[in-house]
Amino acid sequence: MTAIDAQRLLGRIRELGAVGRDGEGRLIRLAASDTDKQGRDLFVGWLRQAGLDVAIDRVGNIFGIWQSPDREQAPLLIGSHIDTVIDAGIYDGCYGVLAGLEVIETLKASGFSPSRPVAVAAFTNEEGVRYTPDMMGSLVHAGGIDAETVLAAVGTDGSVLGQELARIGYAGDREPGFLKPHAYLELHIEQGPVLERESVPIGAVENLQGISWQRITIDGVANHAGTTPMSMRNDAGHAAARTITFLLDRIKASNAPTVATVGTIRFEPNAINVIPSRAVFTIDLRDPDEQRLQAEEAALAAYLEQLATENLTVSVEQLARFEPVIFDLRIVELIEAAAKNRGLGVRRMTSGAGHDAQMLARIAPAAMIFVPSTGGISHSPREHTDDAELVAGANILLDVAAQLAK
Image (cartoon, rainbow, N blue to C red; front, side, top):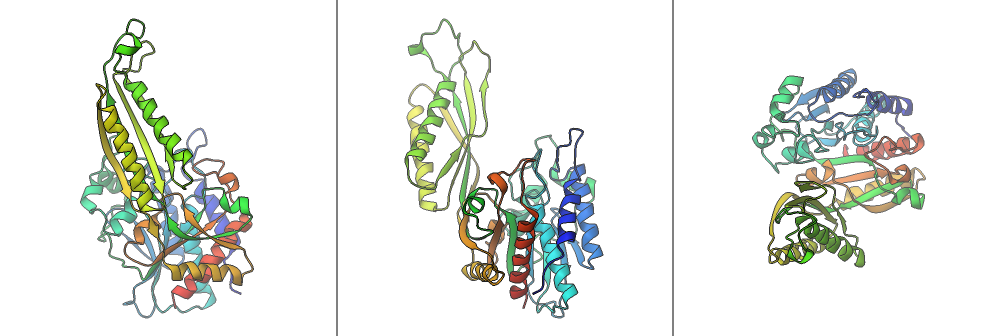
């Protein structure tokens, strides 16, 4: 049975994981930054060593293409991303990209003759740390947002994405979406605890949660913390706390898989002895069922309307909204069959995180393969997956890719 070169894959994961370390040893490769350029340069070098055609589009998406005798056939696309969060682990995104390259190299070396091109992609700004929205490059590729809009995106540091891509040499000449895939595969660490908890080495991802991001601003009246009676306050901070408690208590009391997170909050004037005049906080709602997700959004909106009757002003900004994604059943079944053929346990599962696959699913049959994450930890230097599990996942990717490239 054909297998990937484990040492080559693992060595590349670690080599890329060493690129972008700051003075404290933290891994930081934010999109279109100097360290992102270093990671891109290394990846493109590997693509060229593998004899692949390298193409870069205007938003910086990188493609390594193994051409087949019939170049007119739509290609099989394998991909993920190599940008990171701040103080990241070495596997998130990078594993899927490097495993995709490894699959192509293994198939080439084995004498496999694909009936269609096979390509590996590293999509720009999947994490969305420096620029929003996240999953940006794959969203543009799938036609969900136009290139000019994202190239004009202003980062958290005041930079402009288009200018930064040009500065680091990754403002390509191909038009986004030039490569229309026959199918899309993405291999990823789970970033959650399910596979490890159940001692299952392979996840066949059948769907992906819908995501609703909102920024809530509540305006009240600043006043003296000592002289203003509780009954006479228009306290934006208290209103924010009530909203957060309402939402989290409601979701905890349900038996649904809905999750809610308040990840950022700030008060103005942010002084210990002043009643807050303004509270600004974000809410991240996720559910694999669109109707449930809409119901929670409606419940939150109704609560905020009620708050607005209490001498408070409430405004809501929708930061991101993605419907749940159902992946292609045939590819999910191919993943299950490949795992069983290699004697590996497999289970169908839902992805709790957003991935480039959810964007590519708009334009092609798509699915994902998960491998366990130790402790369910990700977006952290403690992110870890055992080498044997990484290799096993890459071999499943190999087998499924061979089926889809026929």
